[in-house]
Length: 76
Ligand code: SF4
Image 1 (cartoon, helix red, strand yellow):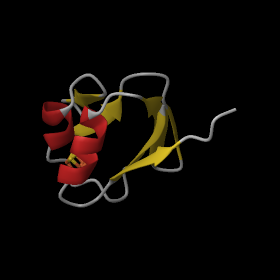
Image 2: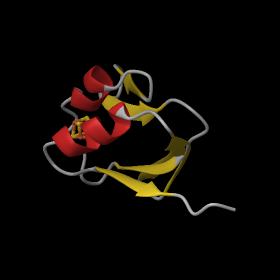
Image 3: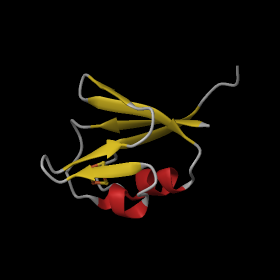
Image 4: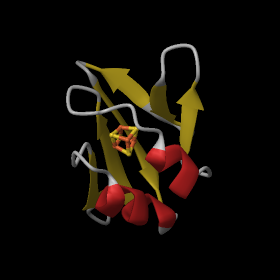
């Protein structure tokens, strides 16, 4: 499982992440913002959650402004 962080301060609202990885990223058409679909919490301009879907890493790699971070979670 990996930790995923979406930084709204950097996001350019292009919608690419929701297209590349719709299992993990949704798109709020009203605010033109992406969101994390599962078990995410949003605070201080960042949303964070967990995923094991490899397309999240693809979205992070392709995000034009590097607004998505993926990190390995330490095993408990
Ligand atoms: S790909 Fe990056 S810039 Fe585009 S909507 Fe997603 S987080 Fe924002």
